[in-house]
Image 1 (cartoon, rainbow, N blue to C red):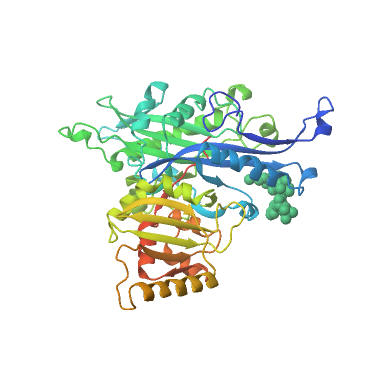
Image 2: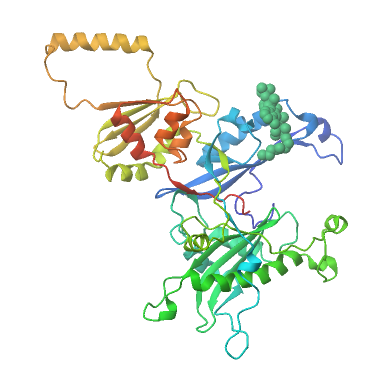
Length: 484
Ligand SMILES: CC(C)(COP(=O)(O)OP(=O)(O)OC[C@H]1O[C@@H](n2cnc3c(N)ncnc32)[C@H](O)[C@@H]1OP(=O)(O)O)[C@@H](O)C(=O)NCCC(=O)NCCS
């Protein structure tokens, strides 16, 4: 965790509470509560963002319910995250607890689908040819090295991963460097590390690199996290037209044999070079682990990935499950909206409300802990987002008196039948209960779903609804926060 290889945190990203009485006693650890703040690179449409993740969070039992975590989160972690520009914060954690700090269940974590019986689907033995000899693998896997990192970066862009997502995390250079170097089989020593195995797919005949694969072992099972074929090959060569159908059996056969050995034996030296044979608590306690069957493989590729679609069409995958919705917090909605303005403007530009000039006012009724305001106002002029700010809705009395005043003015200046100045901006209004709007802005629920969910959620008129639907469309997500 504290090695210089870590890319999602530094030694300064911890907020701690120390008991001064323990501090005075030599040999005692004075830390009684702690929160760690990680940072991940991500995107919202075309805009690159930084996400913060709180993990882990904990207080020693004796010190609980004294407000220690409340203080750490509100007085240290949130200000630090805001200051360094984490516009979105995530937590995978205790049900209900974090709502009090402004988090709502919104963005889903990346998930996968179980490949049914991989042993039967992809037998280890290759079919035999006419002479009875076993056929050679058409594609071979080789262990990734530092020299391959750029190739991995090239083949793991959201587009290459078929991540049809408008909100996601990147597998960037730092990610691959960490996975390939820090998590290489040789370096991995500890049971609690998340084990990754990165391979390059090589065409056996041409010896050319034609793709990449990444598997991981988390919580007792393997996940096929990344699999991309390099389509950037010579089209005149028929072998260069790679399809998942050709390559998958070869890759899965080899992953099965390589990963099994790797995951069972990464600490084989503790076992005198011998594979542990059966589940054995004592061995586990000594740091040795039971053999793991390659009986479950989670296909963690995107739903639109050709491999997922192919395996699904062959009936080899369990039904898709919804991803676990993470606690999600947007510390300042104006800051977030301004940051992602280029994406919102593009959505507007390609819509029925292209070039619109409007004031969108959203009332959240009250400001809860973790929210920057009781409402949000976004102003568009000729299709450009010119301002986003916290905003407070007027009371019914204020509205009534203002209306009466403006009526009087119109009557005295222009006469009741005069047209209203055509330059006056259109004001569109909506209201959402506190801690519900994050789901709309992150593309987790659409306007219709939010309106059905709570009676306080309300949109005034068709144009307000249309604008909200255009700006905050429901999208796929590709957020992977569990690889470190
Ligand atoms: C959950 C945990 C972190 C809370 O720490 P803590 O220092 O006791 O939290 P606080 O005292 O700041 O609690 C703030 C409020 O949340 C309430 N609360 C505490 N634990 C709660 C829980 N599990 N669920 C809901 N509310 C809880 C407290 O009663 C307090 O409410 P109040 O302000 O109305 O009195 C602590 O119980 C813990 O370490 N649990 C085990 C480890 C764990 O599960 N970590 C989470 C990993 S994400």
